[in-house]
Length: 324
Image (cartoon, rainbow, N blue to C red; front, side, top):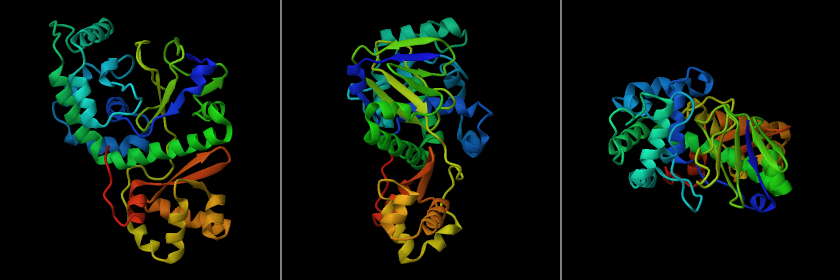
């Protein structure tokens, strides 16, 4: 069980990450690569990713075990709380103080005899490791970044509505079911017992596409508090590109529906905004979802529709998508 103890000051400093974190997604996806579970979500990704990998797997396996602790320095945090893009994150990794690298690799080595650097006493900044992470990210994450970002943005839309409806208490209560808000403690299913005291620092909530089943926190209590938790995955095909459904998108009504979704809305709100019946709004949303233009996430008794990067690009007239 994980228990995060929160004061009133901490509650006022709870915040949502603005986008996916490239390094958290990279590290957590490496868990998913070696895990046979979750095939409906990750199966196609595994099948496509494995042939693109070379020597990265052997080196990364020594620092990211299939389960349990992996070094905190692999997922650096910024004081601002903003998630890292891949280039800035790689630079932060290279600048990790050698003393911290040694300490965290020693901690890993105490648990795993095959850990990186545990046998030969290497203490220099792990340049080879950073290069392997960058190559792995290029093969496993970059091709899917728009889909990852769409899932995280859909989760942010749900949390944002909860925050507007009931403040930080409602936001914490809206988190996935493996996380439970029992004021003043946020509890979560966890492989070991952990007590985290925020001491007025607040908490960053970081939704993650590749996090699965249980959330993740830093081992080092001195680091800025971050709770990485799994997004709820849509029932729509994962990592599917636009298909033959695009031909069905022609027509003013469906364009109006796409525009009406904007920053997110429920089916009832969509019907009202677009001036169509509830059944028609649901049908249009289904076609847009199949075409890869919107992401639909069930929350409680309703569903929330948000634009995917492809849908947003279409509305902007084909403006390029940012990948960081």
